[in-house]
Every structure is written in C-alpha cells, then in structure tokens.
Length: 464
Image (cartoon, rainbow, N blue to C red):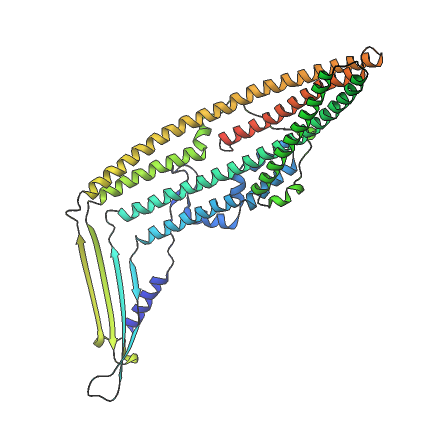
C-alpha cells in the first residue's frame, strides 16, 4: 500500500504545474511592490489597458478630434503588426517557463504489460512492469538559473519592442491622418486656383481674338491652367495613397478607403501644451534605451554562464521498478527494484571551444555596451532635433499666417480698384491666386507643426 501511495505522489509531482516567479520593475526594496512576471503576464491576458498606456492615449485627445482618437483605438485593436508584437511577448514568456523547467527534476513513469509464451508450455503468461525514473541536474553553480535569468531579459526586451511598435503605429496613424486632412485642404484650394486659371485663359483667349493680348501670353495662360490641373491630380493621387495606408494601419481593407472619415482642416485645433525642453530622465524611459540596458544585463549573465561551462556537471538519478506476473500483486516488495546514482562530468578537452565561447561572450558584452552609449547619444539627438524642428516650423507658420493676412489686405484693396473700374476682371482674378497660394502655405505649415508634435511624442517614447 505504501508503494502505491509513493507511486501516485510521484505521478502527481510530474503533472504539477510550477510557474516561474521573477521580479520586474524597481529593484529598490523601498520602492513599489514587486510583481512577478507570471502575474504580470496573466494581467496582460485579462486587460488591454497596457496597450493604451503604451501609446499614452490621453495625449492624443489634445488634437480635440474624436475621429483621430477613434483611429488610434482601431489600430490598437486591429493592427496586425501590433498583434504579432504582442504574440512575440507571449513566446518569450514560454521560453522563460521552458528554461525554468531545466532547473527542476525531470520525472517520468510508465506501464508495460507483456504477454509471452515460453518454449514447452501451452499457455501464454502475462507480466507487468511499472518503471519510474527521476533525474536532476544539481544546479549548485546556478548555471541553469542564470539561463532562466537570460530568458527573462529577452522577455523584458520583447516588452519594449512591443511598446516601441505601439508607439510607432500610433505615430504613423496620426501622421497619415493629418496629411490626409492637409491634402483635403490643398485640393480645395487648388480647385479654386484651377478655376481662376481657366477664367484667366478664357479672358485672354477673347482678348487675343480682339488683338489686345499676344498669342505668347495666351499660350502661357493655357500652360498655367494645365499645370494647375496636373498639380490637382497629384494631390488627389497622394491622398488616395494615404487613405489606403491609413486603412492598413487601422486593420481594414484598402477597398474601404472611401469610407475613411476625417475632420475639416478649418476645425483642426491642437489644445495641448508642447514643452520647450525635455528632462534627461525621459531618455531613460525610451523603449530603445531600456532595450539596450536589458541586453547589457543579459550579456553580463551570458559571460557568467560561459565561465560556469568550465565547472563540472552533477547529475542525480533515481529509479524505481515494480515487476510481477500478476497485476494485483504488482506493487509489493518481492518484485520491486530501487536505485539511486550520481555522476559528475567535467570535460577535460573540447578543442578550445569553451575558451572561445567565453571570449565571444565578452566581445558581445563590449559591443552591446557601445550600443548602449550610442543609443543614449541618438536619443538626445532625436529629442533635440524634434524640439528645434518645432521651434523653427512654428516660426515659419506664424510668418506664413502674417503673409496670408497681408495678401488678403492687398486683395481687398485690389477689389476696391476693380469696383471703381481702375483694374479689369482679368487683373483681379490673377491677384486672387496670390491669396490662394499663401493659404496653401499656411495649410501646409500648420500640418507640419502638428506632425512635428507627433515627432516629439515619438522621440520621447510617448512620455509627454
């Protein structure tokens, strides 16, 4: 009876699910409460809130556009690149569990019935055997434990890769959407320009017939009209391409591009505050910075594992075998066998593989350390570039608005001259294009400024 109980306990041990528990986040004991990777991963399965935290969803409400925030939400839920990034995190989590399994004893149990007929006998006899085997690599040097730690660093890197993907896709959605809004306005203004150029060409054609305008000037007017149509066609092509791109970003078929809604350019209003300087602490929160940090930590562990390859491997094996010709009497001491053995293995000569492997891991550590320094410099450069771009583009935007106001005043004066009969309709129509052209500059620069804000948002890892 005791052996039956022991066997059942052994089988229960084999079926037991043992989950790894590692601490992530702040390692300071006075800081926030530590949360195991296992618990964190389970929380990810229950809620998608971490995805909205990745993209700093509240920041996008500064555009005061529910359509845009709706598309950001659609991308979070439906974008296939983001789904792959999330699945990759789960893959690395399973790698942690696989590596943790190497730290535990490996146990197995079997059942082997046999029917045999011996020479000189008329009847066949049954025999039954139940072998149970336990093997454990004694991890007294913590080599296997270090490999599990390495898997954890890969998991933490995957989290940052996932976060980076969400920030990039959200930025792409915002940039594409704003460019579509800009092109809507550019097309609207260009249609007016084309209409005016058609009027100019028709008037000059009439004047040419009356001998008041040269044929050369009439041809130039026609060329200007055709050129305006070409520009209009180019704007429409660019908008169609961006509409298809936005469809893919939010996870729908480009065939539905005609259903894409957007705000009117004139109603677009950013209500957020853009900082003029960024704290250096923000750099340490960028996904690529954290990734570089985690890879250095992993490389350090990798070097430690390479050193431990010079140490011996200790294995402990236990065997229990129950054998009997009668199933009912299988678990008794008469037909049982038990054994316990240990082995120590130390490779003496491997052709220099272990030495080369150690040097390789050290070189990898140095390379990743330099990558860490480079990532730090690149992060500073990108943030500074974003701030400088915002400053200069805002200055251009204000200058373009002033120029547009002056053109409108000038056109108002010209309109008075037209009403007084001082200038012709042809002259007035030609002057109106100056107003439309400056309006195009204002529209283009306004969207450029908004896209600059998204550039800063991306440069600081969404931490605005």
